[in-house]
Length: 113
Length: 243
Image (cartoon, rainbow over all chains, first blue to last red; front, side):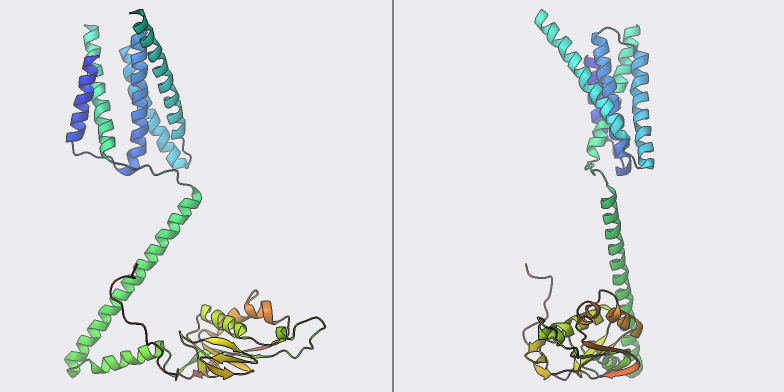
């Protein structure tokens, strides 16, 4: 558990130090991609608790979801339909669901002790 | 071994998430909201207005530059800018309605109705009132009239048109029917504004048979304003409007 947290901190520090900013027209793609990645992370935590974690599925989901979400947003922008709502909705719902399951596992663990 | 390898992966992915979301937070992007079509059109309009304003300002810059060049040329050739300033004064006098001016335009003659007053109707409907004259003057201005006079009385920015019983007071001077309104401008658009459906003449005056005669003229002369200067209270103000 400690290694991903160290990685996260490292990423935050690099992000703070680097001069990169996202142009406003790409910000919506980026935020949807971040949401997709977060969804993958929660899914990963859940599967690791369930002992079904598979690194290939995790990595492919992480990048695949992010890229698909960004592409959907792009298509929606071109068509004038906010398709990225679909991505936000799907990922948001899954995120909360995964979190609920993780919570239950953790509470059960805590009670056993 | 396998477990170690995926820890590396996790480390890299976590670093990636941290990096990307930090950059996103740092970019300080405010939520734009949903852009609806009316909002879009509004914004488009706004842009167009600003562009038009920009163009006008640019035009005025080049105008001022031209003026400056004129002054300079005047000073170089005659030693003073007097001649050019005189021309300018002439222009200002034209704008402020002090000069007698000439140009194409229309002459509108208004006279009281000749119709018989039917029973139960107010005789006032068949007479010309101050408001009728005011409305017509306003419509002429909207159609681009550059100089207007009523019965020889030049209409300026401070002219008052007010009811005076059976007469109308224009700048405090009494005038009676018939009212002859002269306007210099594009004769076609001036006439069209007076005759257009929904115009004041069409809406309020045709019914009661008030006599309206509109005449397009190629060349008409309008006398300058000959009253006293009425600007006694206002002064030039520097800076913006006081809050």
